[in-house]
Length: 69
Image 1: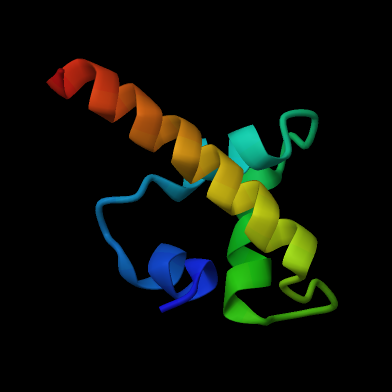
Image 2: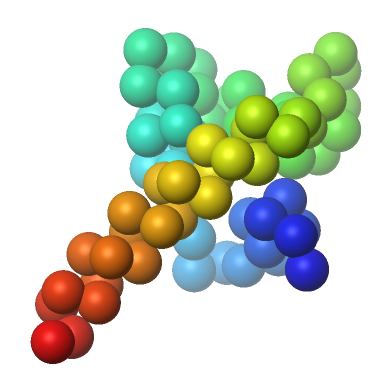
């Protein structure tokens, strides 16, 4: 499973929060991410998007790991 499929299929992931961290200056980040994930419109999912999402998920993972220690 790649990061795009993970984001699309995991209901425990708050896409609004992920999107705002991926594009902190974009006020419509959640809509932007939703369109990219769905493949609608002219916003394709790119390797750069995948890298940004992985970085945000890595940060979240690190925070959870610190909490569990």
